[in-house]
Image (cartoon, rainbow, N blue to C red; front, side, top):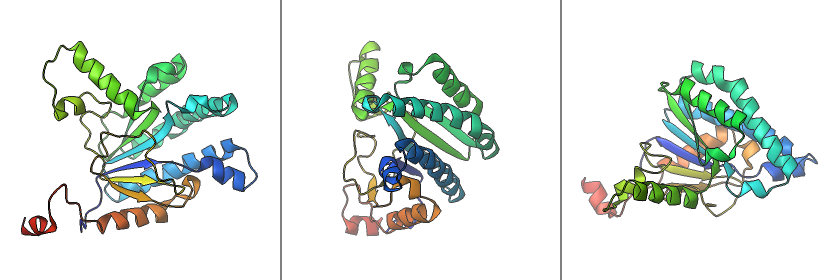
Length: 235
C-alpha cells in the first residue's frame, strides 16, 4: 500500500446536469453548485498536503452544448476569477488555465492570463483548470510544437515537455464522479499510471468527506509501475 497522500489529484467533475435535473432545476444551477464543490475540494486538498489539483472544467467538445449553457459557463469562469482571486492569493494557490485558450473571448482570456500572472509565485498548491481542453488536441499541439522546432529525435520526455502540463508531475489519482466509467479524452498521456477512483456521487455533492474517502482508497492501492510485489517489498 502507498500509505502516502497523493501529490497530484486529477478530477473529471461529472454530474452537474443530473444533480440539477434531480431537483427540478436548470442545468446552470448544477454548474453553480459544482463550482462550490471545487472550492471546497481545493481547500481540503491543500490542507492534506496535495500539491497539484487538475480539474476538467470545459472540454473541446463542450462547445456543442446549448448556447445558453455555454454562455453561462463563460460567465461563471469570469465571475469565479473575480470572486476567488483574493482567497487564492491568501491561501497561496497558483492558478493555471490550460487548453486552447485562443477560442475564448479577448476579455475572458485576458482575465485568465491576469489571474495566472498574479498567482504564479504562490507555492502551497497548484490548481490546473483545463478549459477548451482535449487530450488528443493537446498531444497534436505538442507534436506540432516539436516539428516547428525542427527536432529530429522524439522520446517520451520530449512529448511530456511540450504538453500543456509541462513541468507538472503526472497525476497519482484520477477521480471521476457520477459513476461514469470512461476518461473522456482527459489527460490521456499523463494518467498512464494513475490510480482511478470512480464514485456514484455527483460532483455538486462531492465535498470534504468524499475527497477524504477517495484519498483513503488511493492509500490502499499497491502502485507497481510494472514491477512485482516482491520487487517492491525488496526495495
